[in-house]
Image (cartoon, rainbow, N blue to C red; front, side, top):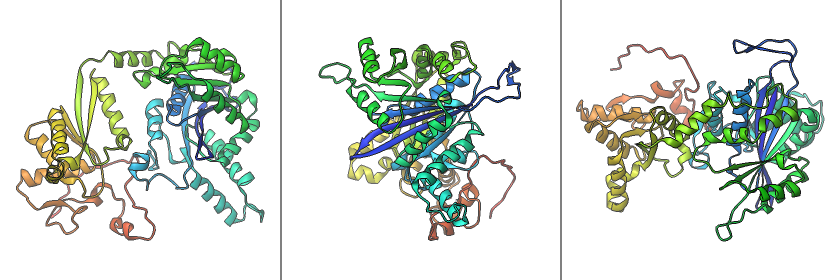
Length: 503
């Protein structure tokens, strides 16, 4: 098996913060052949690990790099899965504000996790589960529970070795299931991985460092000093990069590549360049073209060929198709969290994939539902008219999920506008509930139609939140409890539709 990790190193307010992303890949067995797409053998190869670290700044594409590496190795016949390790004390992402972290992605088993795991599932075409997400809260809870049970036999429980051992134990246990990708912050995790590289041994462990190579507009020269400092800081923590992936706005010049090679103590072949591209579909192709498959084969002794060119044909084809798109399709997304687009990341990706399937370039227009309401016309007429102009230009309207009554009036007006003008409409979760309410009010003349989510004593309750997403009759009580933990109906479940009449 092989695991890939991504780790971001940066300095923030004088404190070291680290972000790592893990990708684990299960290797085929020794002396095997592929028969009908399956591996046949009895002797498993040892687990391999790739640590992908990131430096200088966050948001330079560590997740895309890790996903692309996983895609390439999966194209070589390896099985890939992912774990994301998050620094927060929360047990999971279920109570996060969308303005802080974007959407909460729900896994098949009901696990509520960071939106990055949604990207990994889409990119790698795999299913992840709640144990594929490790948080600081989970680790500390696990260690504290062991201490309460007496598993430590009266020893003083400390960050080192107990927390770091728990991290390694969790990662290795999950390795038996398939592999990991994720983000890590905090010195306990750093120390855990420093120890882990020796436990795994050099032939089973590889470190890739992703770093920014800025190009100031004033000089137009690509600067290597940030990368040098980032690698130096990484080595100070006990980890040395085997590959350096340079992120830049334009292709890295050969002189810059050689300079990074010299000051970071790696061969020029170990410096990989990933510049800005029109779509993320091009990244796996760029990595493969620079010989990353051959490097992994030699460095980790993987039973694969030197190239995945033929197997990456679909990715090349998809990237070429995306760049050739001419016609556009404009979709209006009417929600109340539109200031942070990550709040609707999965919706955007689903629309992008759908547009690509019909050879259209997606033009997604984010509209704050409050801007469509009459109160906004009184307070800010310009914002009101701009929002309605966007809506009128749309080829289709989508109202996603949400909570609370704020902004629902604007969503209802957008739904009514789309229905009356026969504009294609899709309602997701709350959006579908509002579509039912709008139809009942304006087509069935049920003026008091409402949802018990907004009005518990509604005269005409056409939608009921318990029927939509609550798994118990104590939904409303769960919000009044001292512990905030609403019980939603989460995960992939078998649904049986039947006739039901409510009077």
